[in-house]
Length: 262
Length: 266
Image 1: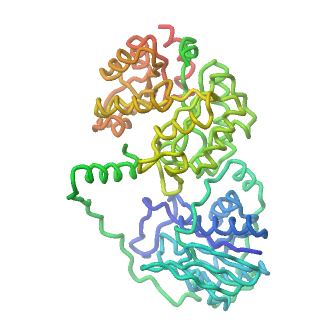
Image 2 (image 1 turned 90 degrees about the horizontal axis):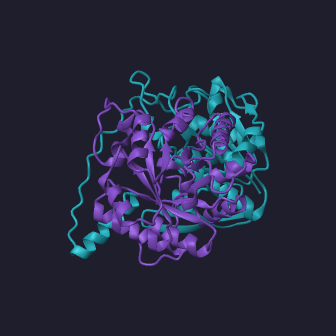
Image 3 (image 1 turned 180 degrees about the horizontal axis):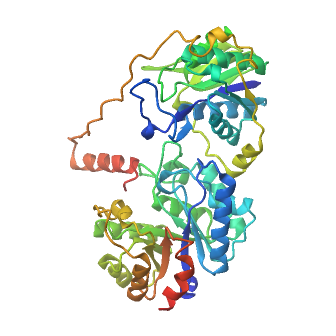
């Protein structure tokens, strides 16, 4: 089983700022982290590998510094990483990005499964996973909360819905996107990190993956961000506890403990 | 623990490299340098566990990876409730095999990326979440006699509540306590020493000049420009609590470390 996990480097949540001119997120000089949803995708891939054997390859498209999220992937169990980095990719929207990632998957070859986090916390579109499936012409399942079973031919996965879940069977090769409920990502170990530091991570250009220049970067992006604004500040929330004294104390303690305040 | 307290040693807090570091080798070198200095001085190195919820590497794995010595009673590992059960046992087993006996068991600070022990995993019943009390009990039962278990004591919390909590911790297996940072003297610590004369108590000294950083710990705002001399405070703590060991947090290894013996002897 060969699994590719697509990850993204995103700004740390509290540091995100938007350039008023370009309407894009300012990434320079801001702490970058792995998209939190992608850590669940990585864990899902590594768990499948541990159970069924095979190989996990982590990939991302971004500037050279995005190599750090690939090392993070290797730290927690991916076997190798591939960085897609080229000025020609600059300005790609989700469609052009998913095209480039799909071309990388093709170049890697013999891939059975692509796993992505359900969405990135910067763009919040949830479009790249489905976009990769569309470009590859593969079936897909989004919002996967559990991999019930996987064989060389198919994957049976629970998809989360607002009111519950469904169990679907998808022929491989396929693309899935996963939600937080699927697992608890492992905490990286020092041994894993030091091993990741030693790994050679190749950088592939647009030419390396055989990307059509018309389909990447701004040229290949049918959408334009015309305006972006930070969200309005959240109001502080007050909760009135209306139960009995005993119920209220229990509820209050529960809330305080969840916040590690007691 | 009592024997160690009588040796006149310091407990020196050392923060392990953060997971997000981009210069892991340099950070490991720095950790090693501090650790080796602390060992050389005969002090006790206290290694934090994902302090403030910031993901960091575990002290035990660093000691193992760097093949550092852990002389008897010279290493203390902080251990909180934000681990999987498997990781918890890995840490405890590593401590055991490295000969590390001292653990500071705390509830700890969580984060989105950290798992948390579930009550059922540590055999705790009737609680919503695992706190230091349940973790202490579990370690004591699972590793009988292997560790000296320390707990935190916060004199800035409502007093009766904190003493009740301390009683629960002692009943669960705690054998020593470390306070939150104390400036000069604190009446609740005085009460602790008076009412628990057999409990070894380690007083924490805040060694950063930025005392405003303690605002959250003490529960009220300390203005940023508040003057504070940590070395002077350390001297006063020794004077006020002559029978207590001192835990040094945020210690400056470049500017303060070499001055510790003279402060101690004053």
